[in-house]
Length: 293
Image (cartoon, rainbow, N blue to C red):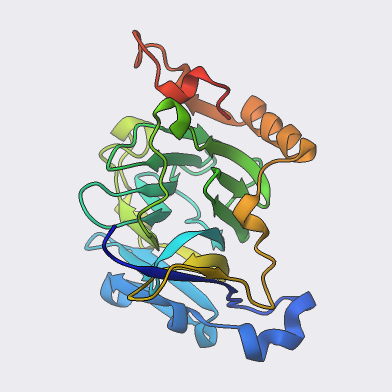
C-alpha cells in the first residue's frame, strides 16, 4: 500500500434524482450499472428500473452480492435499503466497507433477520488490520421491511459514524494516541450481500432459515457518496468539486447529534462490547477506557 501513490477527488454521485437536485441529474447522476458490479449470485442479483434499483435474493442454493467499482479512502456513503420482510430468521443482509488482504480494515453494518413480528438486530463492527471484536448491536425504532430507510457510514481521519435516517447510532473515534489502530491507510470498496447464516444469525443459531419462505429479497436505491476516490499511479490529493462541500471530512456530533446518540443507546442498544465484562474480565479494550459511544 505504502508504495502505491494515490489521488483523491471528492464527488457526489446521485443514483436517483431528489427534488432539490433534479435539475442536476444529467450532469451528476449515475446508476447502479455505472457504479457497482454484481459479484456473485448469478440471476439472484438484479439491477432494475433503468439502473435506479438493485435487488439481492437468497434461496436454498445461493445468496447474492455486489461491490463498488471504485475504492474509497475516507468519505460518506448513504444507501436506502428495504430489508427482507416476513420470517427472515437465519438471513443476514450485510452492507459494509472493506479493504483487501488478510490484514484488512472493515466498517460493518449487518442486519440479522428474525421471526415474523420480532425486531431485526443491527450488528455493527470495526476492523483494523484484520482485528475486529468491536461489536455493538441495536434494535430499530421502525420496521425496516415496510419501506426504504437510509443507512450511512461517515469515515474521516478523526472518527467513524454509523447513522440510520441521519440519526447517529454509533461513533468510533480515532484513538491512535493511546495505541488503538484506526483504519486510515487502506482504501476500501463498498459491498453488500444477502446470505444464509442460520448457524449463528438468529438467537445464536437456535432458529434456522425457513426455506419454505424463500426466496428472500432485499432492495436498494438512492446511493449517494461523497468521498476521496483511490487512484493508483497519481499524486496524492483531494480536490473538491462543485457538488460537494466536503463537510464529511471533519464531521463530528454537535449537541443535537449527541442527544440523539444517547437516545438510541439508552433505548435501542442491546449489546456493547465495552460493557461485556464476562468477555473481557481482566482488561477491557483500550478505547473502552475512554468515553466510547
